Length: 132
Image: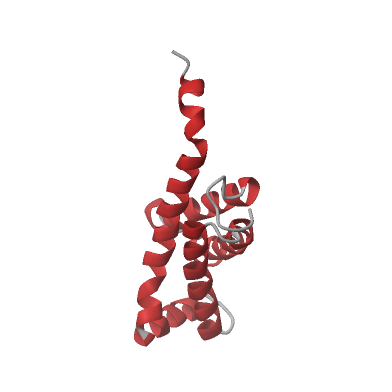
């Protein structure tokens, strides 16, 4: 039995499932900040405490870009473009917040960065609405 031949026909379906899973993670991780102004202010305070300039602007930019990227990945719209923005977002998060942090606290940012790099390199696959 040749496993590569058996499963390679599911590459694009697998990529779609990964886009949906990571897209939901981005939406889930930011929706509280979008739906609650006090949560957004808490996030801005957190960013300010970690040395981010203009923490309220940084908070809004990060939250809305992550949310939009989640929607983009799920729908397959501008996958590479949104992946590039997420690479920048999570590199900054790792460097500014997670240096010296525990792996368990850092893992979500590492996983999202890794998947964003993957999408940047491969595109969204066959099941996209627009762009790669």
